[in-house]
Length: 248
Length: 248
DNA sequence: CGGGTTATTGATGGTGTTCAAGGGGTGTGG
DNA sequence: CCACACCCCTTGAACACCATCAATAACCCG
Image 1: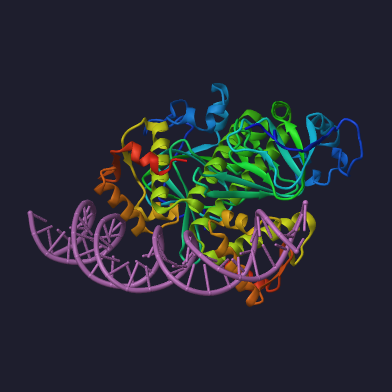
Image 2: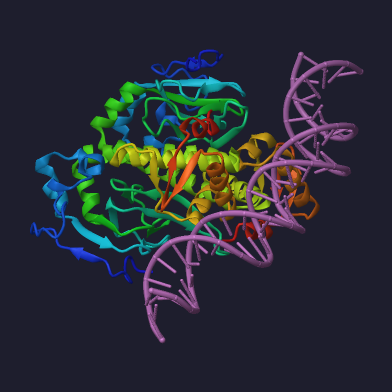
């Protein structure tokens, strides 16, 4: 399937500073300091900008599909995305969720290893793959940064293997909730109220559970006053009991 | 715990070409062309060799422990190693197995994310971390190669998430057996007889199952003539039925 | 308000775990 | 060379956790 072919995403040109929204240019980019781009000095960022194209997508759209040839690499600048791997019989594994600052295409491989679908409206910065690769060859510090990000992803993946392989249902949900909360804390500050833009089915498919099991865990926690359900999220009431579930 | 502190591993000096075994120097190294070192030309390899120290360990020894400060990076030159993550209550997840040519320490992080224990007698090439990092800064093509290897590991980790999250017991064992067989094929040629240096418990801990379940799957396959048990391994009799179990 | 999607809750059941016992191989020491 | 211990693996029986099935409830958006 073609990359972003069926998507009504608006490609915002970058050359001019057309101020359709904030952060249209790298200098004003909200995620610049937490993403790959942080490796580049002010005088180098312009070079990257030439390869960049801003995109904005509504919720529930594919950025790319597993198995497609990789033409674009993406930095998410707002919104959230689910990264998933589908089996032919309908079973699905969500290998991760991407948030602002996350880079999709870390691996620099020729085909995407998973599909990416927006959970919310998303803005992203798309880089031409060939141009980005050429730039990597010229800027070893960018490559170093990319490698650090990839390493971090690998560590997260290995930690998630422990969750999938050896944790029980309640522990899995706790690990997910705490991990998600902590990631959000890095980009928008810590808060007891944790937005959950993904649905119960997405959480289930991330944790190797069913939607019913996830729902029951949240329901039990609500009864036990560990969390309080709020629209599109939860409020953590008893941090300690939650943390205890994944004590290691 | 200290890195390889309690280990009776023999460190073979590398400066002289003392021929205690084959492959003592990079030029004769059996895995040179399939490992990180393949990024380096003949005239660069000597530089890396100055950072290297050959080690040889018996079976059942730790190369390093999860959480230890990373001082050494390892290339496995013979034997196999299990990489594991332990929970305090005894549950264990094996995040992977390392074979000749595999590099441990890809992430360049300051602490090991898992413990490494030899399954068989192992020979490995240990690189001083600081020296290796310095060399990476001088040789971007080495960094590129390291990144490629890390990306590959990430892809494997994400594929394993699907196995752990969404596959049933029999499919998990099939995915493991085929994956292991294919990895061995890359380094020692394809064969229907697949050595399994790890125990049933190790396989179980890799697949998120119990030893009993793994044993039952192999027993069923033996009854159905899909595999034949051989000492320390299996012989694949019905390739097609096995592949069918993980058809996607 | 109505249609569709998503989430919750309950009842039942299955896959894999747990518990328990026995088999098979290997190495050691008498 | 055999006896024995030890470890790992296998096999069986009962159980538990989570999945499945089913019905209802909440929600969203038209």
